[in-house]
Image (cartoon, rainbow, N blue to C red; front, side):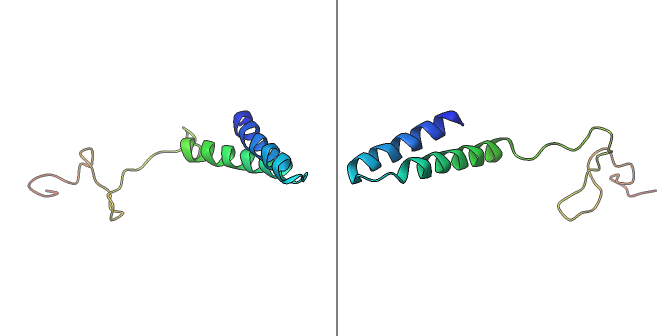
Length: 78
């Protein structure tokens, strides 16, 4: 996250020097921080569910399925 702030803050500093202003350094730092946070969230995603909750396996249609489902055999449920 620090490198994003440094790179975009540096780009803002260069733009400020070129245009003789003082607004682009803070904008660059904030933009770099926001981009870094977005990339971290996109890379690692949401936290996994707590281990105490049971996991259920479902098919794309929402029905239970998978090889561990005893009601699904080649000859039917009987």
